[in-house]
Amino acid sequence: MDHPAEPQFWEQRYVAGTIPWDLGGVPPRLTEFLATQPRDLRVLIPGCGGGHEVAVFHRAGHHVTAIDFAPAAVAQARTNLGPELGAHVVLGDFFAHPLADASFDLVYERTFFCAIPPRLRAAYIQRMTQLLKPDGALLGLFFLGDERDGPPYQLNASDHEALFAPRFLLANDEPVAQPFPLFGAKERWREYRLKR
Ligand SMILES: C[S@@+](CC[C@H](N)C(=O)[O-])C[C@H]1O[C@@H](n2cnc3c(N)ncnc32)[C@H](O)[C@@H]1O
Image (cartoon, rainbow, N blue to C red):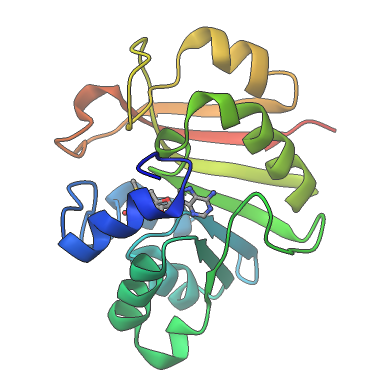
């Protein structure tokens, strides 16, 4: 089915090489963030696509699991990363793949939340709170705005209040110095901390 909730939607784009969201590297803000962190965090990267961030988290001393449900995305990530780091990339559905509860210190977000249809947002929050440790963080780049069509689907203030705010504290919310052209000034770096 050609719908962003289905792997085929993304699969055909990776097979065709039509992946305008792919940065071909890592957002500079993530590199800055990692320089401030202790080592040995358990990190999840959902909807990892080409998986560029896996190597950066690994080099910074963290234990990374990346997951994507499109086989061509996973194949591309494994090619990009090579056999050793490629083994950190799992083929599976973020919402259903068996991952241990409360097992991640940090979930890294870039163009996954905006890739899922808004009807899956409550499930996204529920899954994040299930997978994160009690003091865990969900952080990365979010695409804000009031348009309802997508993908990319924008996060508006009312969904933030209704879905994120009850479970997460918005500890940091910054403009991005060099926003990705596809997202422009609507791209923000956010750090959500799980509420106790
Ligand atoms: C817009 S792409 C972003 C890829 C990557 N994060 C990046 O920044 O280049 C969205 C990715 O999310 C994946 N995806 C969407 N829904 C998913 C789900 N339920 N489980 C796992 N991956 C999913 C797609 O296959 C696609 O690779």
